Length: 84
Length: 173
Image 1: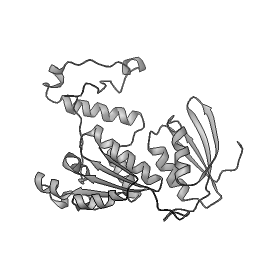
Image 2: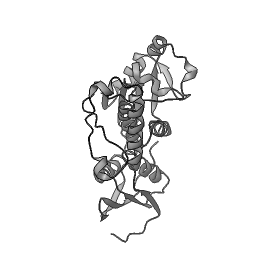
Image 3: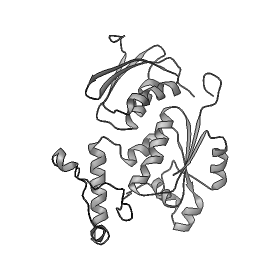
Image 4: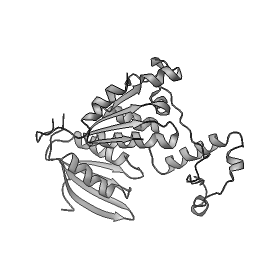
C-alpha cells in the first residue's frame, strides 16, 4: 500500500486549517475517477480532517503514513465523480 | 443532487462581527464546507457587513478581552512563548496600541501558515458560497452597494431564513 502509484502530488506543509482541506479538495476535482492523489501535510488537525473530507466527498483514503515529526503522507483514490 | 441521489448538506452562517479575530470563523467554516461540496450561505449583518467590502482592513483590540494571548511573533522560541501581562492602562490608553496588536496578530497568523481573510473570502467565492449582505445594515451605516464586492448579494432577513430553513447546520457567529 505504501508504494502505491500516485498520479498527482500536493505539498501542504506549513499550511494551517482550512488550507490543506481546500487544496486537497481542489486537487481531487482535477482527477479522473480511479486516479490517486498524494498529499503531504504538517498540520496535526489534518489527520482527522482528511478523513472527514474523503467521507463527505465520497472518496477513499488509501494511505496515512507518518513520515517524521507531525508530517504525514496521505494517498487518496478518487472514487466519486465531481458533484454538481 | 449528489451522486447517491441525496441533496448536499447545507451550512447557514450569520456573521455579525468585523474584528480580525472574529472574521476568521465564518470564512474558515464556509470555505471548509465548500471544499466538502456542501451548499453554504453566509448572512453578513451589523459589524460583519464590512467584511464584504472591496477593501477590508479588519483589526483587533485587546481591550475588554482578557483571553487574548499577548505574544511576540519573532525572536527565539522561548521569547515567543512569553505571554506578556500588559496592564489595561497601557492597552486602553496608548495611541496606536490596537494597530500594533493587529500587526502582531497578522504576523503570527502568517508565521503559522494561516490564510489571510482576503484569501479565505476568495476561497469561499471559488466554492460558490453565497455571500449575502444585509440591506438594513447597509442603510443604517450609510454604505453604498458599489463599496462591496460584485459577488455579494444584498438582501434581508427573509432571504437568509429561507436558505437556512433547509440547512443541516445553522450558526450565529
